[in-house]
Length: 352
Image (cartoon, rainbow, N blue to C red):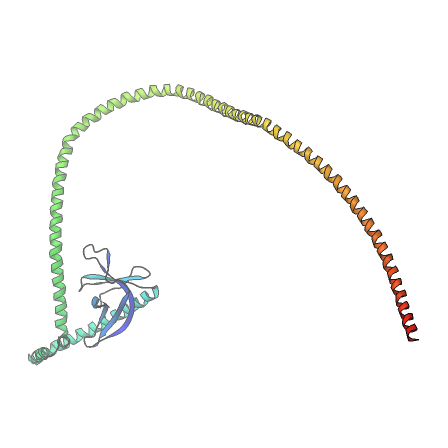
């Protein structure tokens, strides 16, 4: 019975069998990846299942190596499955734990292999002594058991031979494939060599032609050098004239720039001169408006002074009216007091 001893989650990839370079995703999302230990066979496997599909079924052997290719990605090669598995982890810590477990399981597999070899030697010696009785009993038990029981009763030597046989078959198939590929490459190289030979013959035939052309070119080169010497002498004179012309040209450009600046200033002055009559008219209108405002201000000041005088007169009249009203109030109070006394006197007379 196999039992999981370590479980994690990761994105599973497999190497592209055609290019052996690109990674092909084996799962659309992160899946569970587990280490399993088979106590019956004393073996370790890495198993991952996506739904009902088994995407990793790799038996760990002592010669396997887990390589970290980045902070979150690692890979190992499985020669039995003839592929390379890659795992993308969510963090660097998950990758470190998986790699540590891989090393631990690899060492355990190595120990198990050593023990298996010791048992094989012991069983082979025992089988030589006991004859053929044991294989027949093993065969009988394998016919009566299930598939798992059949596998568990197979001798370790048969397991090793079967794995070696599978590996050799895969190597032979790979060799046949490589042989066909090498034959194709060899034919391609032969065709290329034939083309190269033809090109070499053509090149040899054209060498003489090139030599003649080189001699002609040398004569022309000598003639051209003499001509270049005379042209250099003329060029020095031309350079002096060019320098003089360049200085004159720069001076002309400076004068043209100054002229453009003056033209701009003149144009600005003309525009300002055109605006001046309009500004004068506006100034006259503003002056008239100012005078009219001053006149209105004078009239308003006169009105304010008249109103102030009226207010003062009204205040004086109001003060005199208040004084007269007070006098009348005082007189009325006296009359009321006299009337009160008169009433009291009448009441006394009535009583008498």
